[in-house]
Length: 328
Image (cartoon, rainbow, N blue to C red; front, side, top):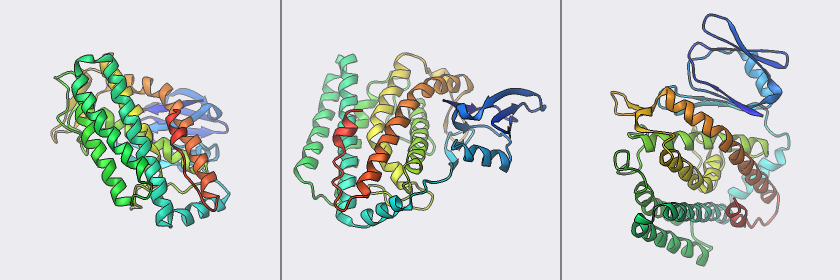
């Protein structure tokens, strides 16, 4: 199974039977790919495909993620037919409509996220002993938040969201210290990202979100109904929830890309609006590295979503998921 990345304008996709053909802007056939070998399609250029091709990919349960060709923002996400067992979505709705159950699940998400952020800083500290003081201070703050989450299992949603925000306020300044001064961000920024590190983080988070949407549909869950993230127009709230415990893994991976100089400042450029964009050479590096990492993250998200589906089917779900996330 593999991901098909389309990063060149003018490419035409056409499905014929069990095969997906790729033609260049002049109409010349470049590749033929058996659809059974495709896991997903990611489009980040002005490409052409018709409804029959989309229908064929959907029938084979191959999702199609369309990104803004410049900024890398998610524009559209096509997925296959939803899971046929509507009882799972009904159980999800009934459970998350109960404030106490929603808060219990949200607490599990926040706790797992905070713990993974602390592990990321500890891992960076092993390679950067010169940053012991800022990393240690941030870890102490994160540990205190963890302690509060453990000691008070009845925290309301607003307080849980506040804990997540406090964790981010401690985490990112310490995390950014690990990057070289010439690319070190002053703070987390997005929409648009204004430096190479934030641009790469935003792209990684967008792609992880796409994997989470796929996992929700495969498990028979509605990605729009979540716990930690409130439902909103155009937001897959449960997918947003699911990615939170994995953000620290994406952060550490991106730090390694820059540390190993696989991504370098010359791979990025600034446009007139101030947005920082990953150039063609940098995208080639990013997609290559993302390909093998994303397989593991998709498996983890699939496992988490299936676990949630089972929890939603119980009358008194516990959402004791921390050990499952921690094992990742």
